[in-house]
Image 1 (cartoon, helix red, strand yellow):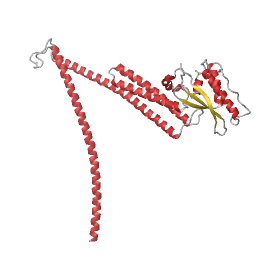
Image 2 (cartoon, rainbow, N blue to C red):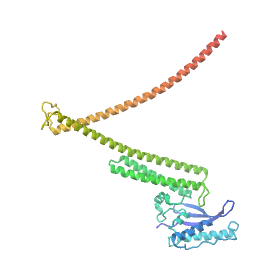
Image 3 (tube, one colour):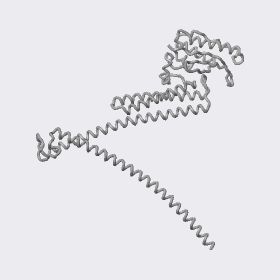
Image 4 (tube, rainbow, N blue to C red):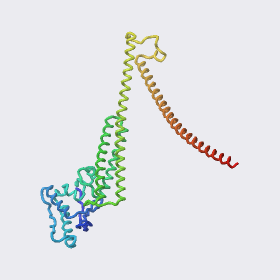
Amino acid sequence: MTSQPEISIPTTSTSTTSKPYTIYNITLRLPLRTFTLQKRYSDFTTLHSTLSSQAGAPPPSSLPPKSYFTSTTTSPALAESRRIALQTYLQTLNTSPDDRWRNTPAWRSFLNLPSSNSNHNNRHTTATSSSHQQPITDPVVWLDYHRDLKSQLHSARLQLTKRDQASSAQAQHECSAQAKKYLVKAGSMISALESGLKTLGGDSWGSQKLGDGEMRRRRDLVEAAKKEKEGLENLGNAMVAKAGLDMSIAQATKGDKDKLLAANGSAEGARKPATSGRVLGKETDRTRALDNQGVLQLQQQLMREQDEDVDVLAQAVARQKQIGMEIHEELIVQKDLLGLLDEDVDRVQGKIDVARKRIGKIH
């Protein structure tokens, strides 16, 4: 069982709005990091009523009463006493043996904790379930989400690499499914990060506003992650399309060969009656010493050699095509250069003609 975070309210501050109010700075100390949240008294009252509704019973501690005649912005003593009372309220809930209030979504959302507080080490899983969490309001939590997003994209790339190296169709399908799963999670996390940037860039309560430079840097990180995700999705789709094309070509090639062999067999059967043996006098030096099985193997070997020759010829034709295209491009460049040279010659000729006219006037 993991330890609960340390919660305290060390300081208060006053808002700069037209109607000022007191802000309570809540500090949370987790095993790996510490961050601060800003809440007002109305946020605590909303939390208290929501906890009572979601847990089915009122919390073990009560909130300090609301003051109708004195304001905490004008009375430092009242602000200090309320700060202590609110700190006691949170600490009582945090250390209570009964954890039903701490397991409610309202408690985790109020303190910006992961969606499952029973396993702090499973932050990778909770971060990916952003659709069930409140918007990100803490800059450190945003960076944690971004690290998890990079991990998801890295895992998707590894699965696509494994798919490319897999030899069986079943293994390729499993790798594609895993890669798609990681990419779907990455898409939901990108949406959560974009929503978090809107919150961190505004004046939402309970969030820490970032500077313009840091906001631009984080937007660039999200855009880079988007491009990487799109690239991985396109790569996965291209792999699936290539696999389907290869299968279609293999089936078509096999079908054409079967039809050709069947057609040749039908033609031979139509031209001459079926015989139980080979026709003497039409043997070659390579087939004369072979039995029927040996002749069949020789024919298959010759067909394989012909297929290899056709592949080599296709590669040579492809190279010739590439060379022809490069020559064509070079000719276009040379043509453009000759056009520029022709223009330069005309321009120089025009200057020479002008110079000759001036010389003629001088003489």
